Amino acid sequence: MAEAIATRLAGEGAMTGLEARSAGVGAFPGSPPSGGAVRVASKRGVDLRDHRATLLTRREIEWADLILTMSPGHLMRVSELGGGAHATLLTAYAEGTETGADSGSIPDPIGGSDEEYDRTYRRLEDLVGKVLRRLADEASG
Image (cartoon, rainbow, N blue to C red; front, side, top):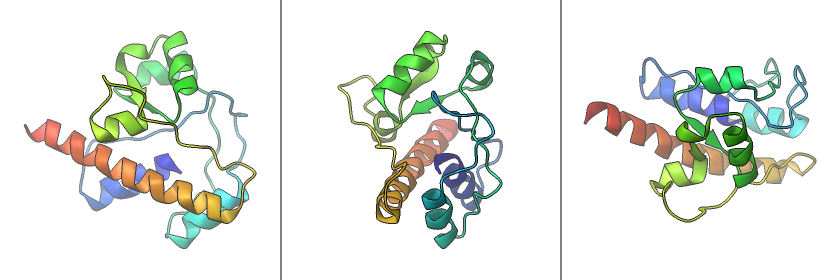
């Protein structure tokens, strides 16, 4: 959901040159998104039906300029794969506190109700919006 949200918001904000990708530390490559994610995103005009899971590897880490993770455990895996220098928690980066204390994880709603997916979607939309505003400010300043 975060990748689709970032792509949508970047397009709405006319942010050129931004490419968002997602990869999971425990993903089954090629797996489709959960039904809850598809339904919740669809209600907001975002089509996830063609999205497929990608496993996080060194190749994805080498591609990325910035890696934002959903949890400290994910951040640890990025570091193990050599990407720690340009990785931080999504919550921390969005709030500008990546050098401070743990700002919290974003719970994975997998297996949960559509309401849980909706809460996660809204939280991601808020955080990703903050990230994009920060990136735009840094690019212009």
